View 1 (cartoon, helix red, strand yellow):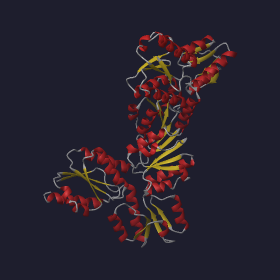
View 2 (cartoon, chains in turn orange, brown):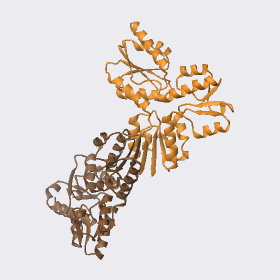
View 3 (tube, helix red, strand yellow):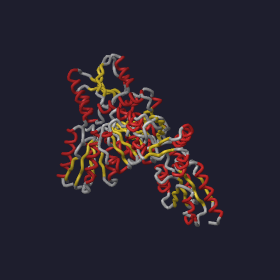
View 4 (spheres, rainbow over the protein chains, first blue to last red):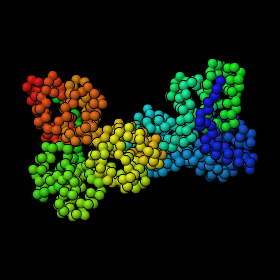
Length: 290
Length: 290
């Protein structure tokens, strides 16, 4: 069995930057908090928790005067202000690409644009960007083209994308909104890492000898889900095995039967050590004659 | 033979405003100039010329110290400045919708946007808008989606539409340009009259009992050409008879044979009196038993 790696896979710049900052902070403090998982990868979170990371479900759980690191997804402005008011030491590790989307949302809403966010309204990144709009009554989250079709007319609309969206979807929604306003400002805030990973899996599955793709990433990771969508939209017949860790390789040995060429792709929250582990596990399966 | 009129047809606000201004100016002056035909309708131009209108091919033909009326299509800034420098009395009757596109081109190019104009590079309206961009090296005219695909990457792109473009084309081009920049500003400067006329012909040809459409408008009229495109894109089989005046009805009597239901549509530069004349001519053909 042979393996081909997607050219771009694993940790993106923003996630690496936040994880590095957590590790650094834990060298001088015995306890550092985040709100929500700092990355959508359970193994990496366990590793950091062993070093002293505490993960809170919400801001109220965090003790006054403690230390918090804002994860790459970002937070609404109100959350950061509340934390600071409670004398909590805040280190903001919002990914610079997400930060740009937040700043756009703030500035364009001040400029009387109605803000349309393209993304998943339950995703923390979108909640954070929405929390930078001056008046949330003048903003709406749309998940796709169908929801964009239902947007009401506004003189000025600004379209801002979740950083992990697909380029094609942003283009389609921009086209639809062009007819819903007299001025449309589109912020292509899809991050390069996301686009690179998406292009890389497109390239990967263009190889029609591939029998299946092992996709590594947390099951709640938005960008990993998008990678699966890209694979499926390129070739709906290709089999995708979405795994979070190496244990899921062992519990899916049957999937590898009769497969000669396996592609490997990984979402932006997958650390390099996990990719390497899974790669060698798959190589071992190949060695076992599967 | 029965006739159905498109709900919106003929003179738009901008053209009517310019023609009214020419008529008014000719009441107090024996000679008033325009550069190029004030409207794309030969019959209406002849009527105005009989009242004292002089049509120049270019600005140099206009005598120093004379009086000129800028037609609804507008002119580049440089032309207006040159005329004023030659002590020519300039009355600017640029259509307010075109003016808005010109102002957008000027302001957005000052804001370091690369300007993309969607339209026909030979059309005076596009030449006029282009002549408001601060540096024409930072602007490009694209005719359609294919040309938009070839636009190079620029950090900030502003897309401005010729007022007579089709909404669908602007949407498609906006979608394409979303992937050519990090910020896209789309000015939907398609005028309401254009959209109304396009929607009205769409409605007209939805009636599948219609045997053909008589389309009235100058052969060089961009908005009339777009109406034909809309008809053809709705139903490529429908026959369109594009006429400039009632004489073309008489020279195409064969076209009306075996037709029971005729639709009538008219471009924005077609005066009401011409529509009425053609309507009654067609009714007469019907009365002759065609």
